[in-house]
Length: 144
Image 1: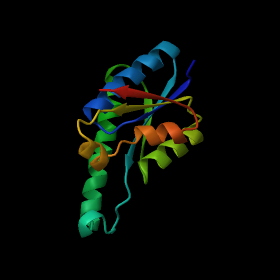
Image 2: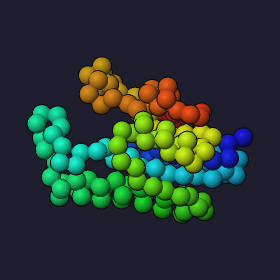
Image 3: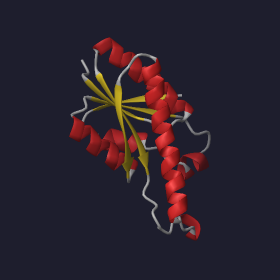
Image 4: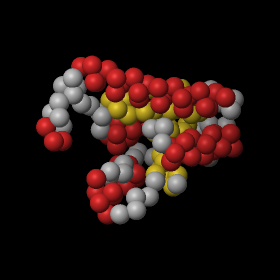
């Protein structure tokens, strides 16, 4: 039975479905819930197409991730679950796995939405396959 669940949450519809499923798992096994949102590092960095993020854009980006995390924690609290949460910075797969190790998670829960074409799959790479390969514990992929 799972005693500590780590939910990687991004606020998407697939993420919301995973949030609901983690809540049901936690209730069933009386497990602790830990919610994370992962913000990719972009501070003053040149990214695709030569775009540069300013400090102001970085702050706005961080605020949006903090709001997603707060929304997830609020949704769990509304259902009677006391969850901890944190914003992580960096590569999502690496940060989720490192957090799972640090907190001793038994299960990582992540949402996934199928892409319709190979272009969508290539352009918007999913973290689910890499997470499954790298995770230090079991992974539940909630498919939308």
